[in-house]
Image (cartoon, rainbow, N blue to C red; front, side, top):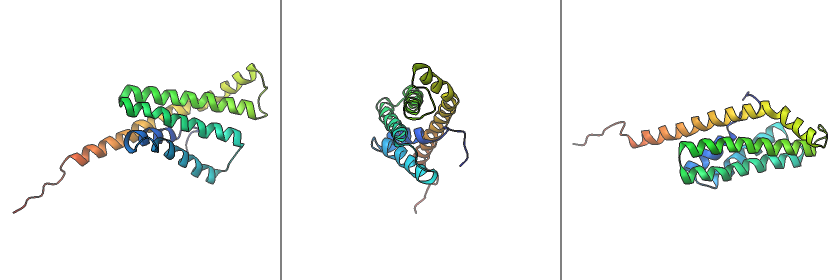
Length: 154
């Protein structure tokens, strides 16, 4: 499905997995989604790929904080923290393992600078998708507790 680069529901899957399905799903769901998309789109340098998969696994572990504290604030802070960690880890890996950047502090800073539009897209996508998916689950649970139809017995 067409989308802005890095604006995906992968982080939201980690949070929904943790909050509603159990801790292990906060890691399994995002990694399976990544693997399926890589099977379709194609694989790339294994070292950079490891940083991407590792970042999402770390975000899955971060989502456990939301499960423990289960508040809007803890979810918001950890979603934003996850996006920032992903940005730092993956851009560092691209700087380190690709030939695109000078291997110096200025090269690393340049990699971060060029990654800023992707960070913006990821933050936006992570916040929106997480709100939407959590909202869908909450509405579904609320509706399941409400008697939509009353059955009269004779």
